[in-house]
Length: 510
Image 1 (cartoon, rainbow, N blue to C red):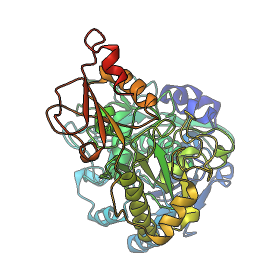
Image 2: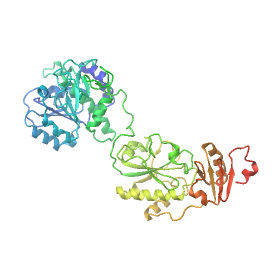
Image 3: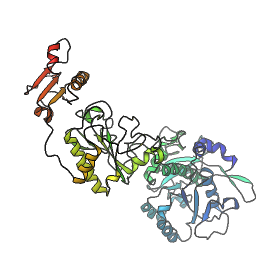
Image 4: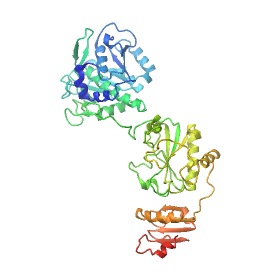
């Protein structure tokens, strides 16, 4: 890389990404241009694919500019001014190996370039120069096609739009021009024009694509590339969008993403199933819907959830980034927590089973769901991992291990495995000797004391009125704390108010 471009690399933020190791490594950029064989200093990274270039030209400079911003990317040159059909067929045959296509040629006099329309089907981001005609209300083709990403030119300092850069409603952003390149004699000179702003943006995007690849994300589709560019622009004209600069000067974010966003589209390859529990101290009868629901989903963290009564809820769809594992502690970090988010299904069980037993209905719902998912995704029990360390806060803890108890409750892992193998179904419901029912979160602590005094019996939360869980109605004894009386057989009602609940009445519950 040339020291003359240090300031512009700093301006665009790409220097921060380079210092973090994101230099376009593993990314392939195709240049669709005219003549342009590799200069002597370019031969390490620049390839004339069809071997038909005989002279230094426009594409030679475009390739050097891309290299200045993505020094470890692979740059391939294809002359798209000769046999356009051969060029397209070659790209189509190798589309899975190509990450970006840069087009620094623009149609003359605003004419359309229909040969580029077929590139839309490839699903590869096409970064196109907007043209140097100083048009105020239109940009050149192919940049004007809606499936391409149109890049205009800013000055080298990035403080204004270059006077020659075409403007228009289809412009996405601008990038600095005036980038220095090297001649064969060793001298450097700056090249201006939207032809060189486009590979500047393309090189920056290549660094982001390397980050995506190393974090296990799918290929960057054109619309997501466009969104990334627009969301990382700095205003140099009007606030927001304007026809002169698009959404502004494209710069890489100063802070690299720490992890993949939960909403990131990602088609997971399911290789395992992970079983989690709610380590919040609450009993299984408190639905996850009552615990948290920040994004309007049943289970923001989990792909499936199972309530105490056996209700199975569908949470996150499998075509977005998973979110059920969070810790990178060794030896778990041998794969990395994001591997599990991208290659496994997370099941969340309502209830903290370090304190409460797992209800029978919930256990058999888990057995049924795991059996179904194993069949659907071609998995075996070797691919099923209970969250072994149930008290570990950084879910899923250091390891996934098949510990003696499934969830520190009455169901051992052997019980679980055998139930899976036999595909057992629930035949009878639990009949509790004692159930503790509480009305509000304020009653919970008192209910917990009473439940522990009764040998850790089942606890249920009720929302109001006479409606309660079916297992409560079948219980031999019901201790009702707070709220209206249920008027059920075997009920002992406590107000939850120490002034009203006499010691004698409390003692009657024990």
